[in-house]
Image (cartoon, rainbow, N blue to C red; front, side):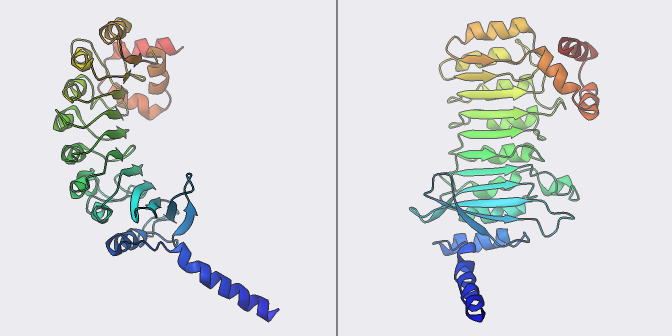
Length: 308
């Protein structure tokens, strides 16, 4: 019996180091240890979906009042580098983006619900995604997702300097029409998905700014009021590159949607209709309260009536 226990302890001891990410690059290892130190659990290793790479995951932020927050790095043994970082409710501040810069072959950064604080105890100034400025030397970083949280105009300014950025997903954030001007003429941006959570911060001017991006292929903008003259018509100048224009649950005149479809015959123009907007606005009391602060009552009534 004793021998079995000892054998078991030896077995666990042999496995324990495997649970700790042992990265080939010392700088990446140090960066991962710095990130992981914010969490309560030791890293857990498992293969990714391809079976060719390794994922290391830590959970439960030490500073949070409850068990919340995860962060995963995906390590590619073939290259010897971390290529993906994914987190949920991890509450990284702008300054805490610095360790990501050590992942020199990072391709994708996905931080879900990285709000103003993992338990909303931090002031919003601690995170607006301007920390992306520390990652401008990462020449393979092409995909950034910071949906749900405090991503703001400081983040857009930093994104303008991500020279290889192809995909940006930032719905339910704090970005504004004015901030979107930072992305004007971005040379590599192909896909952008966004929505202002019925706060009226993005709309026609955002479409005008993004229409200057020469390689724009896919744009999604919902939770906004959009018009032909103010914004949609500007997309026509990207008729040679646009493949998908998704107006999601935006408030748009149906005639303007048809006009856009005629003007972009080679693009798929999608729109859920006024009923979808009405359902989204009235889904919760606070969403309607947000909309009522800036949206004309006529638009709200039309959308709500369409949903009934």
